[in-house]
Image (cartoon, rainbow, N blue to C red; front, side, top):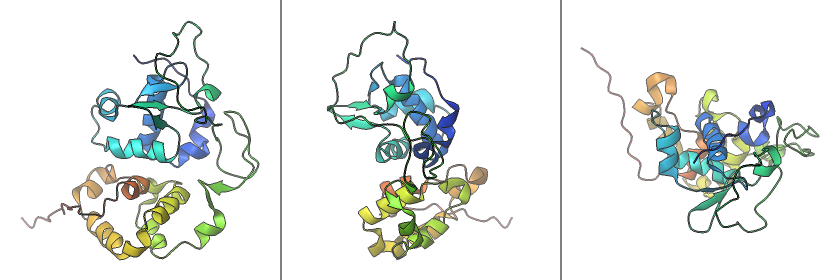
Length: 230
């Protein structure tokens, strides 16, 4: 059963949120609706797709991966999840029933980070950001990225990549993508000619974070748009 929740205006400039793709932001809000008064919910990606994106051609697994990688949602136990910062920014109706789901480990809580990422800015959900960083990657690391990453990042339209560069660099390093950078860049060049990347002004271009998390360059077939000369 979905619940009524609130969204603060500062949500849209949150350090955590601006690094997500647009549909992942909606999914994050949807997890609040699914969550009980303790921020706990059943983790059912297929149900999320049917309930919140019935008319959207989207990769729900990729969207879920974005939330998990950003640690905005943490899974535990047998099919459970928790929104760690839920009680920081939600005021629950006192008449709402107690949680019926098992409690997660006690360390699955944190303060929500809100703002544009500038040093010392106010965290509107509670707290203050004291360091200028994106994810756990420093600005100096972004200025001197490993081989292939700069070209990878430049391959994505600005409207898609948003501000997840730091998180992508983390995943790039973790995946050992530097060793297969040429393969990845060749795959991206092929994708630029595919239907998903060209129709509806690129509406279905995946976020680079989803691409890396899914290791989509591995064994992926690309359906290239065939030009008609009729």
